[in-house]
Image 1 (cartoon, rainbow over the protein chains, first blue to last red):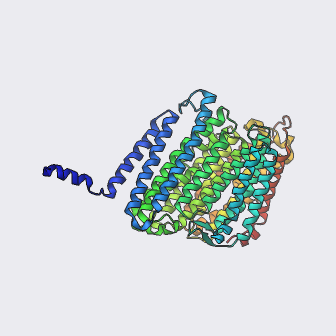
Image 2: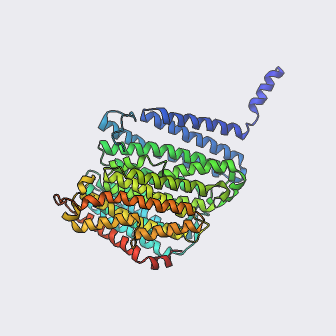
Image 3: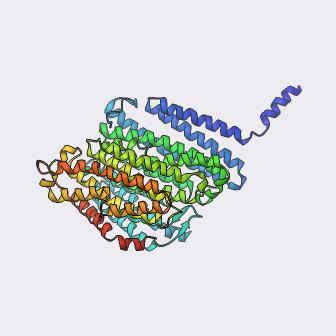
Length: 116
Length: 452
């Protein structure tokens, strides 16, 4: 095996530093937040919120791996967050359905009759 | 374990009440679900009384049984009962009447979890539990306005919850623990501390409808049934304010939390009162007024750790606020949602009109009513803690709020119109609320001796 290939393989196999996970998590969160702010379709907004929550989970398990003293706390926290995301989206989709039944649209700009 | 469960008896009673009422609803017996919910919540309130004065934690420090948590139960559970009674005339004989009572119980449980939180996971859980039920309650009428209010409430809520959980993750990473009592370690990591603080204030500020996280409140209140608006303006809000208090106690001062909370207080009081000045819809007016009232609450939070009055002031103001705000919403249910509906109420229904005047001047904070005692303590605590400027802003805002509430009072004594109906449950609620508003004001001395 040529040494250059071996070098690439070593880099890939080396343990990633915590910062790597945190940066990916932060980028995912930012993409989700950006989408939640600019997209007009309510269902897409929910998907963006899911992306934000999954960024939280990635960050949590990364921290949990990095903090050996926390004894599985990070993982159980992540499980709690997953359950929260599921519960939230269940109610959210029910609300979107109710909105669609009464207005025939899920565009958040059009669902704005109350002001003041 | 058995000891921990005994300490959680009130919460367990609330859960059992909700589950029992849900069973009756499944058996198509909503007429049983209503009294069952009321009795169950009364039992839960009763179970709290023996816990008074206990200062301990349950489940390895994750849940706190302290003055804030106990008094939250004693204030919020009766407020929930009154909201349930108020909801009855609005939802009776609708298709899923019983689920409304169940959702009230479960949402109140979320607020109790928030008020006693000793762990960031409980904060997240409390926000979620008190939100999910609220979304469904707002959307219950399923018409255009209700679903629109619920939609705005939900979209805003899910984004702020995600922000809050994300920030709290960094607290966990920095301290290696999720316990609030370990937050003292944050002093060494200012960046993570600041990031988490902003995030948690976004999440809890949303629940407490603090400016600038309040946008959902007027729309959700307007779309929801009046009883649900009354409930949302009291129970989840007080729960979230108490959660901010639980958190602030353990945060080191170098994170700058007192200044951040003080800034939110100024924004909420000022914006809430100014926006209320231009509302034509009484529900929206009360929504903005309740945003301003959350600002007053924060005066007590800012004083935590610096003033012995802080916890006392929070509890007394919470009790007074619950009574007067519920009373005001009950009269709205009786009279109607617009300012025009209030024309002549003082003449056509003199008793209800007089009660409304009492609730409104109590919201301003005029002696000898409950709102006055609560505000006096809050301002006293803030001054005690060295936040004199904040107390001055609070007092100025109280003056402005007089103009807000006079906008409702003035037409009430104008030309009389037809006499509105007064259903018995609504009358029962405002009479109870009136008793407490007057009682808290008059019995302030006795009450002050007991809250420590």
